[in-house]
Amino acid sequence: MDAGLFYGLQTLIQLTESAGTAGWTVQSTYIEDAPRFDYRGFMMDVSRHFRSKEFVKKQIDVLARYKLNRLHLHLADGAGWRIEIKKYPRLTEFAAWRPQATWKEWWFGENNRKYCEQNDPRAHGGFFTQDDIRELLKYAEERHIVIIPEIEMPAHFEEVLAAYPELSCAGEPYKNDDFCVGNEQTFTFLEEVLTEIMELFPSEYIHVGGDEAGKRAWKTCPKCQQRMKENNLKDVNELQSYLIHRIEVFLNAHGRKLLGWDEIMEGGLAPNATVMSWRGEEGGLNAVRMGHRAIMTPGDYCYLDKYQDAPFSQPEAIGGYLPLSQIYSYNPVPEALTSDEAKLIYGVQANLWAEYIPTDEYYEYMLYPRLLALAEVAWSAPNVNLTQISIHVH
Ligand code: ACM
Image 1 (tube, rainbow, N blue to C red):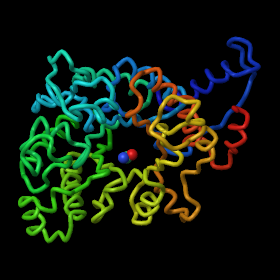
Image 2 (image 1 turned 180 degrees about the vertical axis):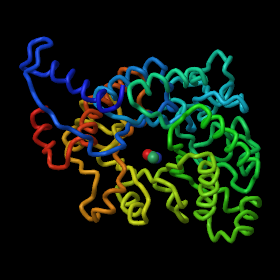
Image 3 (image 1 turned 90 degrees about the horizontal axis):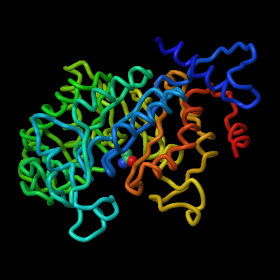
Image 4 (image 1 turned 90 degrees about the vertical axis):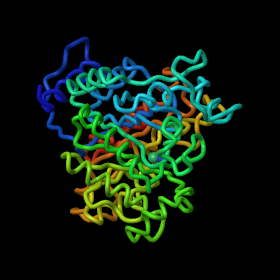
């Protein structure tokens, strides 16, 4: 079924569900409708606490009903690697497991931030097999949703460096959180992993993370220093830019596009990259002014891990405050943009990081109804007054 017909059907279902209609009876009506943005996204963090395939499918059903069309899966982070890679079995035998059930215990507790073998009786975690991923992709495709995989680099990479310490500047586990950019083996690893990722995921975009790299070890690592010298890179920001640019060349050669968090602009943006603007809108604004596409996901409007009500009345969350009305009030196209620049705002996305979300129930509590407000922002024409809708919902 084509996307337009599929979305028309979702609207029809919504009409039958809305107040004032009896059962399946709908008053004769004419609706002309189209989405404001091509990219209407949601990011699910499955690293901090692993989620089952069934749970992901359940959320896909909701995305489809509300006409969201991208599911960005954050598949790898320090808290656990979550996808089978045939060439690198230690990623799922070891880097996907930890002795503590919750992220909080793993991060702050005793003997913290370590991993364990899959068959260790203490092991908590999990991963998607490649067959699981194929099943999820098919399920999503039938509902007009593209799944975009994110493989983080060069930071949020501790779990990989514990499994393959030769990829770190120190050459030992539990020493660095960024990988070594001076080491050619790192590029072999990245290209082999991305090759399996591209074989699985048909998405136009591959997300490579790029956020929050400390870049500390690079300043003294002889291999990183050598790489900088050979390529006339003046600082470690340019070294990160070298890495992202090189990975972009690799992805482009395989017909894919690179997507990354706004830090990929530091040290120079790779020529064809799309920027996901999370530290406010600045990154997105700068990207479109340079002729690049941007996806808006600023923390103040799109981070569903923040509290949705007064913290004393809520289960523990990461911090901050993002009520439903704030999401409804969001306009992803900053007024400062010209109409040509505005066309490069590809879309908008809500993110739900899961450090403080150990259970499925709590995950859904944080997700709904706020994700549905984001869906309205992503779909509705700019002249629709969503603030009115939010008052109605309250
Ligand atoms: C991010 O929230 N670190 C992208």
